[in-house]
Image (cartoon, rainbow, N blue to C red; front, side, top):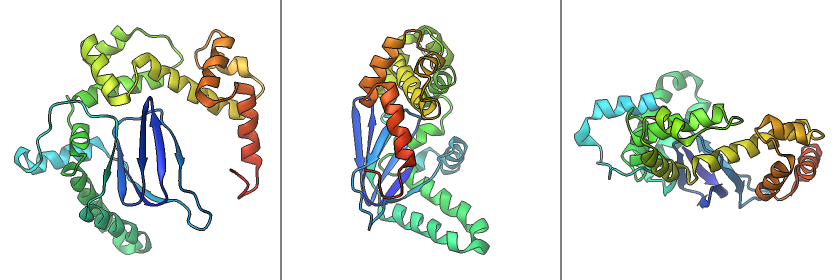
Amino acid sequence: MAVIAQGAKRLALGDRVYEYGPGQYLVASVDLPVTGQFTQADPELPALGFGLVLEPSAVAELLLQAGPGDTPRSDGGTPSGIAVSDASAPLLDAVVRLLRLLDEPRDRAVLAPLVKREILWRLITGEQGATVRQLGLADSSLSHVSRAVRWIREHYAQPFRVEDVARLSGMSVSAFYRNFQAVTAMSPIQFQKQIRLQEARLLLATHPGDVTGVGHRVGYDNPSQFSREYRRQFGAPPSRDAARLRDAVRAPAGALP
């Protein structure tokens, strides 16, 4: 989860756009290929935020401890992989107390785990609790989709049949399509393409002169198709975008747009 304290951010996932600013929080339940940018940037007021990794085992432990009667019921649907809400006062208070422990090394080892549990509990019982609770349920639709997401990420350069990934995730093909789309805002093939293109961009930052080789490494056999889809995604052909990234890295502090 991420809380914005200062500034604002916009994330794009497929055809969905998420924006959040001060006093709001975002929950991401799956490792998704998002693109993002800060939309309120001021050198005098840099963007500030807080992030916390949500461990499924910690969610499961809290759910077991609380019991079914102490947590809100889910509507049974599959939640989106990303959600934004206004942070409640108790949630913000817990976040602030955890941050203050950064200056208290003696107290941090004892108190930080307790405050993290409190933050997790506020999320479980909050507006995005359905998403967070599914993280801790081994047989939830979100867990099944997460299994497929991990497999596609690890084998993104390989062609695959959706039927095989559906079976790997423990779902029928129709249920897999429906739930994967609900979580990621993409089809499995579109998801793979996003991973391929983002990996290609990372490779081009260090191998700017090997466009054909990079395209092949991420799974494209056709160089023209790679260049066409890359340009559609990032707004420039691979070679030109690689040069732009290289120039941006070399630019002095404060010179970036």
